[in-house]
Length: 147
Image 1 (cartoon, rainbow, N blue to C red):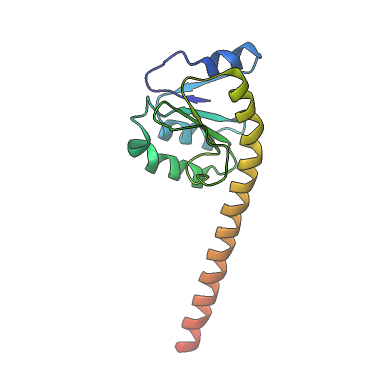
Image 2: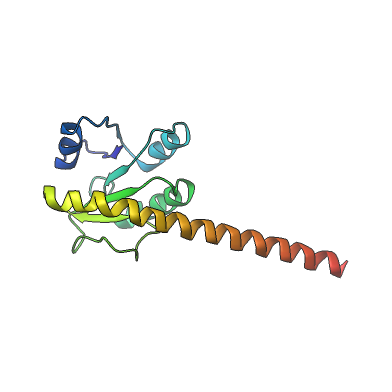
């Protein structure tokens, strides 16, 4: 799935289509979230961050999407990025970030890294949810003792 408001003809979309993988183009992250909630067939989301107004505009939608659909790998593509990001420091907004212009070798590396990073993100979210749930249970137990 591509989130590409300006419908630019990204090399990434061409490379994926050439591999006979079905693609879908959406205009914004809330649209992507609605589609992801209603289908099990979304395997990867690629967001043209430049078309979305840059990270300052899209950050909130990205974080919301990542929390609601933590099981879907997400790649950002941006000309504003200083470099490619394959590490786990920015998992709250994406699994991988690529700098425009793209190359097929860097895109292939992103596809290899996105799955591994997404597994780490899923683990973080599940641990956070478990910790939050335990905290709620403990707080509820404490309130009962007071009354």
